[in-house]
Length: 100
Image 1 (tube, rainbow, N blue to C red):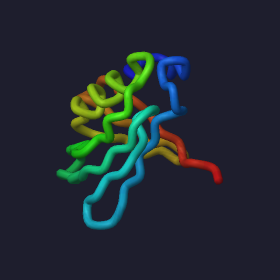
Image 2: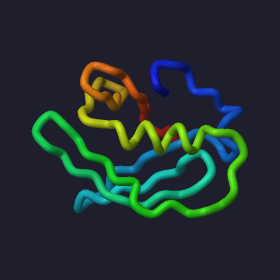
Image 3: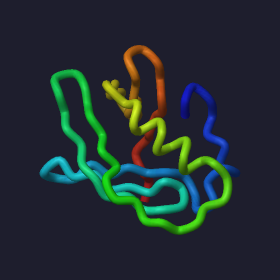
């Protein structure tokens, strides 16, 4: 995240996740709280709106860093097994498919 490896110690509940749902809906986990919002694809860009976030108290600053990074996302790159969010050419964060 933000060009660095994820410091899992900053996320009290585990690794953050995002799920892209039908109708432009977005659901996810911040590493402490759940979120429910929306996304909008715009040409080669994407706009993410985390919307509502539950309010459980969280240790560490991982959740705030994650939400801040989501707010900066302007475009994305899709690889074989990785989705990368960018702000121009700056890599903000990457996601890999969840293995059940």
